[in-house]
Amino acid sequence: MSQSMMWAVLLGTSVFCFVIKLLGHYIPETWLSHPRLQRINALIPISLLSALIVAQGLVIKTHIVIDHRLAGVGVALAALLAKMPFPVVVVSAAVASALFYHLH
Amino acid sequence: MAKFPRDTFRDSLSVSITVGAYGVAFGAASIAAHFSVLQTCLFSLLAFTGASQFAAVGVVAAGGAGLSAVAAATLLSTRNALYGMQMSPLLKVRGLKKIAAAHVTIDESTGVALAQTPRGTDAMRAGFWLTGLGVFIFWNIFTLLGALGAKALGDPASFGLDAAVPAAYLGLLWPRLQTNFLRLVAVASMIFALAITSWLPAGLPIIMSVLVAIAFGWREV
Image (cartoon, rainbow over all chains, first blue to last red; front, side, top):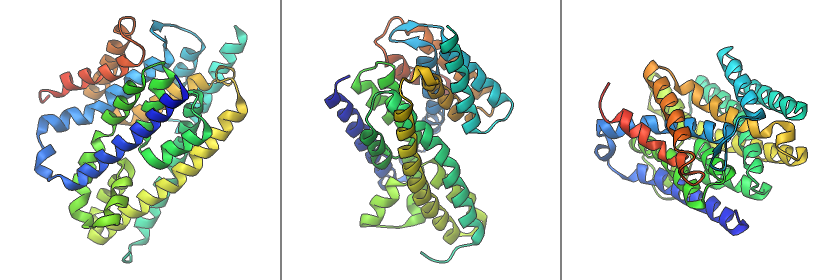
């Protein structure tokens, strides 16, 4: 991605995210209180974060690739199951992935 | 600002500092996606909504188009509009204060404000502002530290940074999976995103996963 496109992503994200926050403060509560809208809205973060996990952990460009990253995500999953705090989860994933990367 | 209970102050401060750890992860993720340190810091200053920032740099790192990155970030930030709707009648501010209130309308400020309900309206307002400003300060400091740290380390794969990023997403997702239904939505989204990966340009499967949210949210369960 070109530098100018990266600036566009930064500014576009900043502007849209702020406008959405501001809209919330101006629109009447009844507009967005439809139950269907609220249900979908609550699920969007779950779907997007799930897709981001596989997109960054299992995919390169448009191909599914199983490599050292999966070892890291696997260790992160184990750490979360063991109720470890966030920093431990991330660092243990990085260490596991780096070990795999250098062993191969 | 009116006086507020000490407990409200403590709630706000502990949330603000805890969120800092995520700021380090964002700083590192952004550098791994080849954004500069300056761009990384501007993300946290200007966009200032964690999950959306992660999504924007995540789509870029996945090789997605700029439009996909902005769309993913925007979709993830729609919940902030719902928070604003709830906070606006409580805060009753105008002008510049309204702009400031909107900018710090995020998961944490709204969450702490709502948690203060038993302590009264003043405590709720204080909780919103203290947490919003507290997270803003710590999130930005820790973003800078994460960015500088990742920059100093160098090759992302060599230090496991390329796995730390999806691990951070998993860490963000985990506390949201409180029911079997929500876990099902997460697994279905992953399978769906993987299934369409080979057919669509990079980054687009991330956006398309919103279809899974729409499908599962359409009817009450």
